[in-house]
Length: 234
Image 1 (cartoon, rainbow, N blue to C red):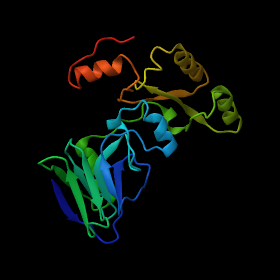
Image 2 (tube, rainbow, N blue to C red):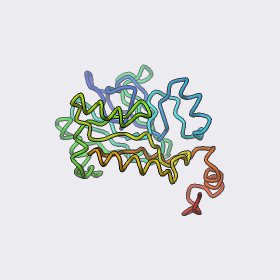
Image 3 (cartoon, rainbow, N blue to C red):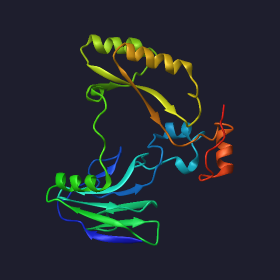
């Protein structure tokens, strides 16, 4: 099911969740589906060995945080409410002058939020669907960094020596997918050491499960996505 809306001259199209390929999406076809990516060709050859194919994104707009929401600089926004996969063709070469909203369903649910400014349209949308709670810690306002080497303590000290007000360190821990961090004592120790230095630790939660995480993957595949709580795994 799809619907075409006029693409106003001079409009730019923002939003769509976390995307790495563009800020203004006019002239592009954007897919709204939870995927892991995007990756370079070399990265893709590695991750495809353990990321299940349905969750591996090869497109430049691949993202694990898609939001089927387009905000126009003319002062309105369009939100698709369908849970099914959707795609937006925003004044593309195949559909000049229109924005085509497509869902993999026999029913399309969408809402249009007026402004008259982009900020007001965004405020109306967030008031309708819910807003992020207030920050729980002032650490969010400081400098975040992700160490490039295993000597994270040395890197942190060098950052501080240069006057960088580091408040959060990304630990590169991706909880769940391959089970590597399950019960890792070293992560507890590193988190404690960071807190002792006045730095918060943050990690990444990925809802997918690697094909080589056994027996978790095979059990999940056998039981299906709605089979209830799985048994405890080592």
